[in-house]
Length: 229
Image (cartoon, rainbow, N blue to C red):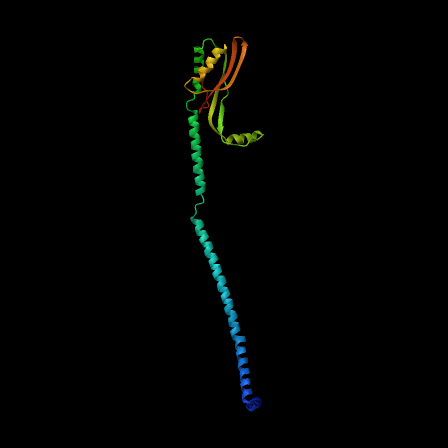
């Protein structure tokens, strides 16, 4: 080995100065190449990987922060607020409906007074004869919407979804008399201070000048009971 080294040294010493410089340059190049290949390049790759990992960590951190902000914002929101507003609006509308219904029913003649008032009017018009007198079935006036079904089960469910606002009470009477007396009786009904309405009206001439007038006169009340006669 020592002999080979001495032989290489002797050959180098025999080279010209330019050749020695070329040999030195090649040697330095090889040394730098090996340093870059085995040291600098792995360090560069490792640094690139580290930068990529840091960038991914920053992105994950930013996403996590965004989610945290969204959760914090969600926690500060009152999702029942809109429902409460709609509920209050519905209550207000229902209150207005109740007031309207109350105003509508005010002023109607009480059911228990209807028979007395109608008979009193007949006494005033003595030329009239009361042929028949009776009570109509009480009709509930409901509010609310429900689908109409064909069977009894669904109809019972439908009635549960309705709310009775008030009741319609009616009386049917058949009066016999001449045209002008019957006309005056109908006019006198319209002059009563307390309100009522005629739901059915039928006039028929029997034997001139006698005629028959069939009326169904009704009023409304919050009470289902009909105390009369």
